[in-house]
Length: 453
Image 1 (tube, rainbow, N blue to C red):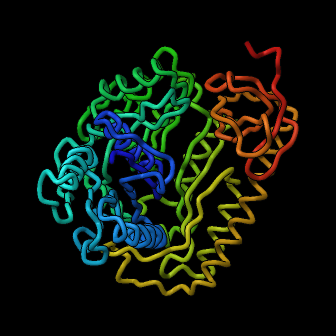
Image 2 (cartoon, rainbow, N blue to C red):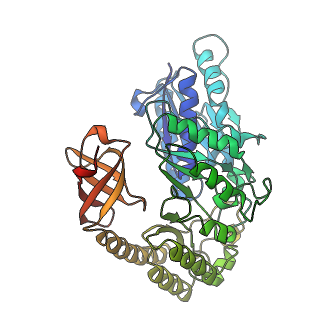
Image 3 (cartoon, rainbow, N blue to C red):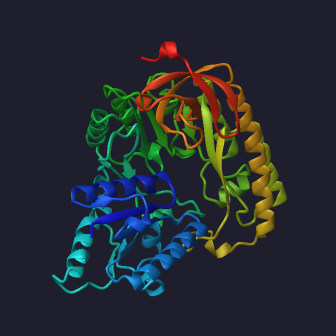
């Protein structure tokens, strides 16, 4: 009884947490399986950023609870942000849960599972639902394990936990706690270890990544702690590419802008959350910048890096968003021409500053606004992809493509997905691909054989 399936909801941070839990479990002798029907233990790593994400996880847990009632030896656990948000109340709603793990206790999962499975083998009383959600000092340093099931071409590296911002719509400060940074040396050591096992690209993760260690590490020669970290990671031999997500306009200064073009491994891509094109709504969201400030930063980035690919986050239907407010968002969204975007319909999150405002914008209005921005995004993304036709792109080959026999996929430095006909031996290599066709979500091309070793 040591087969574990982990299902992850939500962001890259959650994916990284699941990966670390899987690695720790492998190290304890558990096997990680790819389907819940093959598992003796199912762990759901949950998200609370939107109500829909919570409801999906609760529904899934309820479905799996039926299996548990038929098979008492089946173990069901829930981890992550929803647990931190709802706490022991989840036990009242889902009494069949064996394990509830908060965002600072992922490293405790192996011990808790050992205890549960030992009791099921008749070597002790079966514990009631284990709820472990207390804060733990130093927990940011525990998410450094990676699944040891073969080389990772691209890997996430968590550099910090928590968030000190007070965005009125956001539940992250409650579910992730205050900002806590890992030491630069530890992060660089993790990257070096990954590269030694075949990783070619890393994405540095933080809730507000450019606020990394601002209270713990002093500026050096006018460079923020995050820029100092980027410089150190850029020096790691064998690493080809660096990405990071997500920055915040409030901490975006010239030293970070200057990294583009100066650090050769830093990719020409940035995820830069706008949230709204209305200064009034940004103020209500407690986002401490104006649209003009956002635009100035982006213009400076594009002047420094003309080929920059930009993605963003936008929320439609925030309480009080008028037609005029949304029109401002539409205009800014179209003017900037984002290459990719996550567009969300507002939902109330408990214990946030905006919660007392309710959800006054009708769902059909939010849906209409959402679709308007999606239509703009599709045109912008297609236009950007079509501009690549006829060019030769450096592609980091990731895996076989889901469509087409013999097709493989990878990404260029601008994070665009590119498909081409290739072979298994190319996985993990940087190869030149001539772009022939483009769609909204990916490009297709031919391998330039003269450039492939």
